[in-house]
Structure formats: structure tokens, C-alpha cells
Image 1 (cartoon, chains in turn green, yellow):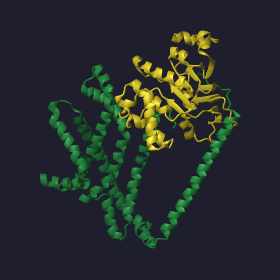
Image 2 (cartoon, helix red, strand yellow):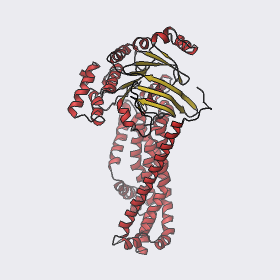
Image 3 (cartoon, helix red, strand yellow):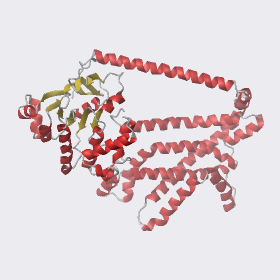
Image 4 (spheres, rainbow over the protein chains, first blue to last red):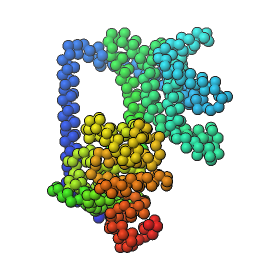
Length: 284
Length: 248
């Protein structure tokens, strides 16, 4: 199959391309016009709301943002630390639980059962309740003072491991059995098959779902404030009391968005790329 | 764009490029109403691509596609409406696994062709009956053998009474003992006057059923003629070489 260097599009094709370009331009113009109208409508309705000036003052006050920045930022750094440790913890615990759930054979029944019970219970329990149970229960149990950020991290790991374990398990099960069979036929053991053949394919399949869970966890890190850890949310609460307006909360919210946004875009990009790869040649 | 309805389908200089590869390099072909044309050629010669471009599932880079005299490659033409007029059957059946056999056929009759529920159902049952599978109407596709699934796929493609049927190597994913039932069905459709353009590797079948054989080579129709002409007395060296390789 050769490339025709000499080929030039026919007049008909050029006319069609020109038409498609015009159609694209028209779509862009319509899109732009509709965006302007929409923005204007939102703007007018918002500005004309009687309480708008008041809301602006108490939620979007630049002076308060500047004043509360040092403390909120300092708190946000704690959120980042918790996030890093929690992510590592979730990766380990979730993999372990997913692995336990794949074990076959009657000997492993208790472990399999425990793993299943774990995911059932902690996917069903609100994170805030787990936070309270861990935050106030564990110190009581060991009769010792433990830093609240550590307890918060533990609670996050407990809850999110349950979700992530299920995602991983779904991925493991989505790998076609013939892959497992082919690996065993080559002489790989159960564990080798899992590690070398099944897991890499499973991870590829569930990457978007895992990234989605990560984004969810990024913002739930803010909930450790209920235990008293001075993170961005708690700091914002303190600053809100000091400045007597709610702008610090908005500031903290913006920080969380800024943290999550690259990951959200990355997730979209990865999903789109995977879809493209799977639908090679398909255009409709 | 003057209607010239002497042909069911006319292809004029169809070009298709994938990246740096010219798969179709100016395909000209004329399919007359009620004609069965078998498209033969080596793997990767562009048979499937050509069929997909005709059903507007792949955009072309140049050329014209005339369906019943209408230029359907014109971007002003509603592609969905054109696809609804053409039936296509793929190598891998592509039945919807979540719909029962009957619904695989009846749903599109209702949604695309706007038939009332009862009529769509009757039409779908008639189509199933025609392919000898009326008893399986309530089953899910995975309960059927490959040959049965492919017959359902053909019934689905022709149920709306399409003017043109495209078949893309419909037997190549089937076990040998299941090929016969599908070929018998195509033979019958051709005898009943369907206009069919089929890509196939079944040379004996092509020779028996097709009115004309088109040999696709190097992105073009290299040779075309009646089965006796192409198989019996191929005019061009490439055709002879290909036919000797596949053992006719």
C-alpha cells in the first residue's frame, strides 16, 4: 500500500471541506453567542438579587482573603500531608483486601469473609462517623494521646480502602479468564499470574475509577477538621470568627479546587485516551 | 446531483487514507438494483473499509457515493437517514447482548423507522421467521450459536426493507459447520432480489451466488466481471496470482 504523493483533493472534495469548515465556524459562533447570552442572564439575575452586595461582602471579601491567607495556607499544608500518607495507606490496604477477596479454596474462607465484611461495612458507613469512632475511640482504647491528624488519616484509610478495594476487585474480575488460563498454561503460579498478567491489565482498566476515588479523597481530607486538627477547614473556621465574615471558607474551598483540578483534568484525559485506543477506527 | 437511478449504488473515485497509508486509492464501482456483487481481495486490501465508507461509518477523503442516484457523501445530507436506508452485517455479528433477539430487531424499527409497537413486533417476527429463528425471539443472543447469531444480525439488517445490504465477511468468524446455514440465507436473499455487496473469502460461494466479482487490489477495483470471467479467465496478472493463492 503506497502513499500517493501526487494525489490532490478533487474540486468536489475541496468544496466539501470548505462546507465543513463553514459549518464548524457557524457552530463556534453559535456557541459563543449562546455563552454570552447565558453569562449575561446569570450576571443580571445575580447582580439584581437584593442580597448580592451583602453576600459579596461576607463571602468574597479580598481583604479578608488576604488577612486569613497565612493561617488557611498553613492548615492546607497539613491537608496535603494527610493526603499523601492516606493515599499510600489506601494503596496498601486496598490491594491487600482486594487480594484477600480473590483467594480461592476453603482454607481461606475466614479471610475472604472478613475482607468482604470489611468492604460491606465501611462502604456503608458515613466517613464522619468513622472519623468520630476512630478519633475518639482509639485514644480511649489505648489510653494514650494520639495526634488528631494521625487519627484522621487512619479513618480516611479505613473508609477509602473499602471503596478502592472494590474497584480493584472489579478490575481483576474484568480481565478475561482466558488470560489467566494462558498464564497458568505457561506454568505461572496463582500469585505470579496475578502479579505478572492479571494485575497490570486490571489496573489499566480501572485507572479512571481509581483517579476518581483519589479526587474524592482529596476533598474529604478536609473532614479531619471535625477531630480538631487545624487543617485548612478548621483554620478557615477560626479566621471566620476573627473577621466575622465567611470569606476564609471560600478561600479554603478555592485551595481544594486548585488541588483537585489538575487531577480531574488528568482523569478526563486518561479516560479519553483509553477510549480512543479501544475504539480505534470507529468514528460514529 | 441529478438523480440517476439506473444504479442502486455508484462509487466514484473513493479515497481513504489512514495516517500515511492510502487504503482506498480511487474506487469506482457500480451496483445495479437486485445485483449481488462479491468483493474479493487479500486481507488488508480495504474491503471492510470500503463497506464502512459506503454506510458512512467512516468518512472518505475524496470521491462520491451515490445511493439510488443521490449523493450521500455530501455533508449536507443527514448521515443517520442514509445509514437507516443501508443494512450492514459485520464479521462479529454485533448483536446487542442486553436485548432479546426480538428486541434487537424491533427496537430500531420503532426508534429509527417509527413503526408502532405492534407493527414493529410483527415485522421483527417475520424477519426472524424468514431466517428460521422465530422460536428464539425471546432468548438473549448469548444463548444462540454463532451461525444463529449471524442469521439474526442479517435479519436485523434487512428487517426495515433496506435498499442495499452490505455484508462484511459474515462467515469468517464462524465454525465451518455453521457457515453453510448463513450462506444459504444469503443465497436466498439474493434470489429474492436483494441488492447485495459482500466482502468474502468464500470463493466457491462467491462464484455460485454473485452476479459479478470485483477484485480489490492496491486500493482500487483491479478487475471486475462475471464469475466465469474473473474466475475462469482472469485478465490481469495480479488477479491470477491472488486466485491461485486462495485456490479459487
